[in-house]
Length: 185
Image 1 (cartoon, rainbow, N blue to C red):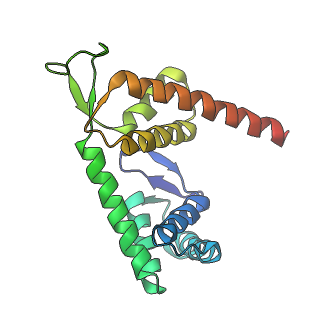
Image 2 (cartoon, rainbow, N blue to C red):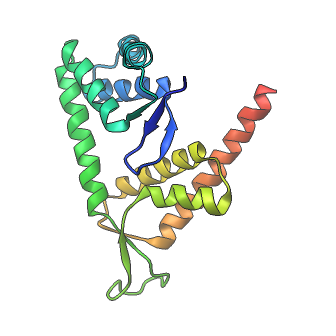
Image 3 (tube, rainbow, N blue to C red):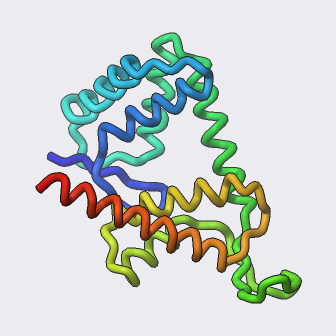
């Protein structure tokens, strides 16, 4: 059975053990307590539970997040659990505060121009539908673009900038994907 993760946008993706390792590593890194061995062990425990004990074909990303928090808190890493929770909340607040300005007029006032809330799932949907890119790769591209947009610390981001970031990251991600495929042959 391949476990599927229900993402916050309603999409499904395969469960990846490495994402749990990355999440735990990031949480430990937030508190300057990097321990790759612990991250691997915690991820192994969560993966074991999901496949051997829980035995459900689907789980939400929120449930996985709560499991990571619980494992960290139960194993003496309460500070990392709190830091991860705060980090996630901060990212959610930033996402909710960002507006994308749809106008294409450089240097013009943003008054009267159409805006929409930031939503990385729109990037994923467009890449899959219009560019015929694999959903997993599209999610990775959208996550990379979102990271850049969040780091700008702007409340209003011009749509052309978002499109340029998507284009640049798509080219880079597809080139890396092709390299991996060629190396595997």
